[in-house]
Amino acid sequence: MTRYRERLPQLNGGLFLTDGGLETTLVFHDGIELPQFASFNLLKTEAGERRLKSYYRTYADIAKRAGTGMILESVSWRASRDWGEKLGYTKKSLAEANRKSIAILEEIRQEYEPGTEAVISGCVGPRGDGYKANREMGMKEAEEYHAEQIGVLADTAADMVSAFTISTAGEAAGIALAARKAGIPAVVSFTVETDGRLPDGDGLGEAIDRVDQVTGGYPAYYMVNCAHPEHFEQVFESGGEWTGRIRGVRGNASRKSHAELDESTELDAGDPKEFGALNARLKRHLPGLSVLGGCCGTDHRHVEQIAAWCAPQGRAQGAGAG
Image (cartoon, rainbow, N blue to C red; front, side):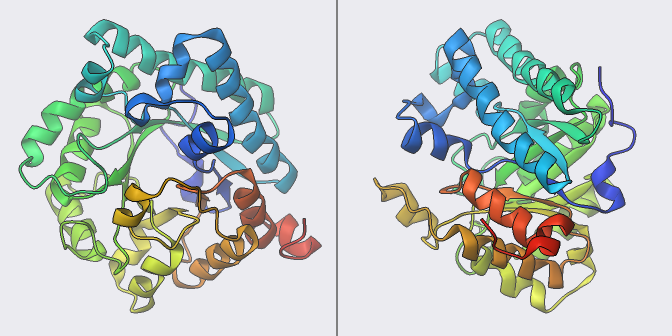
């Protein structure tokens, strides 16, 4: 049963932690092969399902200790039609994988609530490569494509859908419109290059304004993910009304560009303590920032440092402790 669809608590202030780099953990720490980088494929086996639940509990425990809320993000980033076909999924089996990705989060939420407010988010990814701009797909085509997965997620206990690693305003708008039609709140998270601009060259503020304009401001809020905090911090320094629409960040541990990360065969985990401090610094420019976690290269250590630097309990005990 959905719990927060009508009133997302992260919009009311306070800090909500989410997880780090799921694929980073599975591939580099666990040695698990992920064809097409699709973590939802682990739902095929009981062992894979157990591993995912253990992963979520690690981050839920961090949120519980820090006294924050948490966003439970499903493993369905790659669980859309084109990617599913590459992995041999039928329309029926792909829908079931999406439903199962939410069902395991319901179990986690039951373990931690009451006590830790837990929002379930159905994760949506780009139709193509998140590091490259798909200029050929317009808003209407994006709406039609993503409506299939979002429709399935809207029929589950998911409180919202979150689209990550989105590289164009057109695809973002299509996702928001599909979510509006399905009656579920939507969050859009753009990825940016080292210059703080989207892969198609648009400025972050420009993309947010464009999506808001064509969707009637439907996204509940916006995020930035899959880039190092220093790649986009300068974009916020000049301010602007659009910065008030950003409530979440999931940064990369590495300062490498997307092209460099694509070619990298070794994990660059950066400095977890520095990562926590950089996230705290972002809050100076984004007073509404309420959702924090990690992306490529990050793991539980980075999110623990976010809690240490940003959560009230962490600040009281001394930032960077642990």
